[in-house]
Amino acid sequence: MKIIPYGRQQITDEDILAVNNVLRSDLLTQGPAIQAFENAFASYCGSNYAIALSNGTTALHLAALALGVNGSSNVITSPITFVASANCVRYCGGTVWFADIDPVTYTMDIGKVRQLIASKPKGFFQGIIPVDFAGFAVNLEELRALADEHGLWIIEDACHSPGGYFTDKSGKKQVCGNGKFAEISVFSFHPVKHIACGEGGMITTDNKELYEKIMLLRTHGITKDPQLLEDHHGGWYYEMQQLGYNYRLTDFQSALGLSQLGRAENGMERRKAIARKYNETFTNMPGIVSHSGLVTGHAYHLYIIEVNDRKALYDFLKEKNIYTQVHYIPVHTMPYYKQFGWKQGDFPSAEQYYNRCLSLPMYPALSDEEQDYVITSIKTFFA
Ligand SMILES: *Cc1c(COP(=O)(O)O)cnc(C)c1O
Image (tube, rainbow, N blue to C red; front, side, top):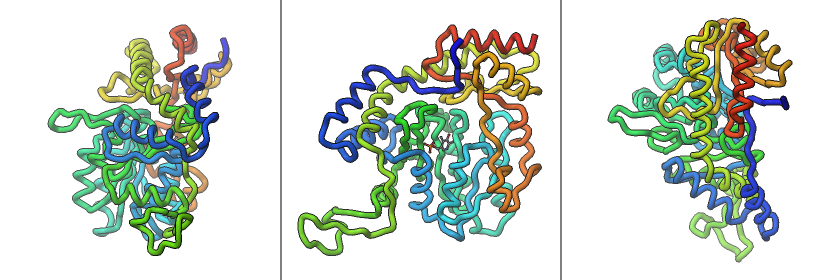
């Protein structure tokens, strides 16, 4: 059997044609595909605005900048996430705080967030960065209520959850990144995510002011918009009004993203089918705990199981060319974060989860035969 990774992209002839068309056009960096991708993505999420960026990390950085994170900011995120969710606060000089996870959803325990906020003086925290971990959509209606009590903003790290949703109190679907609860939502188009651009990211928001700030920061803080200029010398004229960056997505990457977005719903159906089969297998299988079950609104970026002897299973599967992965090593235990005083033992649920978790192959291009091979191999391990 050839190598089966935990996640991978799916590239069709249509995708290749879309990229080719841009490569043969006049504009490789700032052509029409960017806006087409942004418009399609905004409508996919149901947000007013979408801004394409060079990757998910730069999207997080600009989100934090636009919300005013600076050296005196204190921001809360999950210890179980990719490091970029926390790093974006550090890029701006702010301090990162963690709230332990719920051992079933693996997302930040809102009770723990509430406790943390209550343990500090009023006004200590500025914002919260929840992560829709593995594709499980955080209930942002509840988190919004808590944030509003304390005047905090929310950046939703939705890198795992395009197309995911939670159900609000009135029974309505609230799609990740729809702009109704979080000030800003952030997505990634790294090849293991739902939509692949090679590198790529997106911000969605309903807030016009934030949208304009981020658009400016994306291209060096430079504007040519006559309405914003302080002066005007002629057709060539532009002004750099803020310290911005070059965080743009190229036009050919956007064309790939747009083409991929067209198949997002199909991809989600396939992910659900894969989850269903794993679920049927692991329910009642001694030795395996799985909460990645058929949760309504789950985007199934990852399918995670928990086992006692995780390393042995990981090694056993690797021998069989099944490359599982661990998501994630708790951020607070990283050498970089330990310098701020965080240590092993600070977040027991996150650490216990980390000791036991394993992400199984989960991506639309995974064939039935490959999934059966994964399942048979796991059964062999436990036999
Ligand atoms: C992938 C990912 C990111 C970073 O995205 P890149 O596009 O790789 O920079 C941030 N947060 C989470 C939760 C991710 O999974």
